Picture 1 (cartoon, one colour):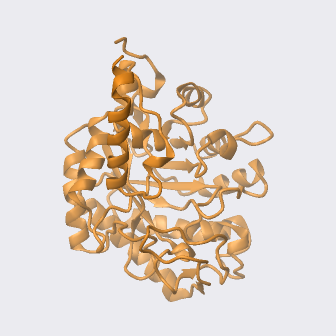
Picture 2 (cartoon, rainbow, N blue to C red; picture 1 turned 90 degrees about the vertical axis):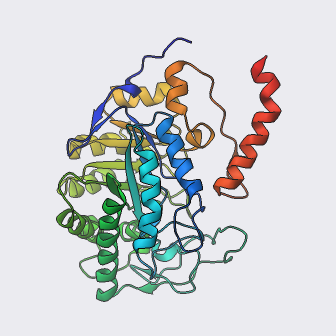
Length: 380
């Protein structure tokens, strides 16, 4: 078949100088397939290894919890809080690094959105919108009312992130991504209705971003300069897909003017609802990714339905993004880059691949059934 020429396959450098073989990134995808103790499995090594073999220039893991106190959000979520979990991840990184792929560990703290705990912490005592959504054996019903974070909690969270980042490097990761999106802890600080604090961590945008910047700087100070540190942000949340920054492009400008002072290796702007146009493009024609690119002058990863190749290429051409992260299309096609490059047909994503379960076992079973059922049509 004819090889496809596309800017998606141009090499790209991150802010710290690390070169990627192309501009295609696997977005973080919740899979709930670690052991009950949060240790990554061989199944996970095979899963991430398939993305690397399939041609992606960079892979970002699912959210990995950072401390044993309040950070974990889900059952069978991987962690990186101790040596056992680190060694489990080491087997995964070794498989990914058989290919020319940069591997990033996304570090997250659930804050008020913990699915497992009866007691959670958050910037303020505000019960999250929505209800818990777990696998079959998890807790159900409304989220608990979180306890207001005190100084000791701030210190414990920061310590957990630094330790998790250090263990990530020991496990063989090329870097980490601080998860400050989708309604989790750092996003709870940024969001006005979940942050009612009257101290230096509440009020204006700079104060609401202060803790994120402190944790970023603590990690930066603890790790070598060539260790990649990215930050992920979003407007919509896992428990509130309709939420948008209240001032639109003005709020985006305020946020990235503040964050331009810390200069991480990249910013990753997520679209939890799956559409860049719906979640990143404003009525005035500006976009959150374009604003971030203009104000910070560091690589920007765009996300949200960007398996639409024409749209993805247009964002690169218009300087609204440097890298493109693919989520659902990658679930159906771990070799999506190779398929596109070779002009081969891709498998369409369909919701049964991740419903009623997000586990790798469920996806593998459904995909296998689909391929068997459609084999005659595809071979015709």
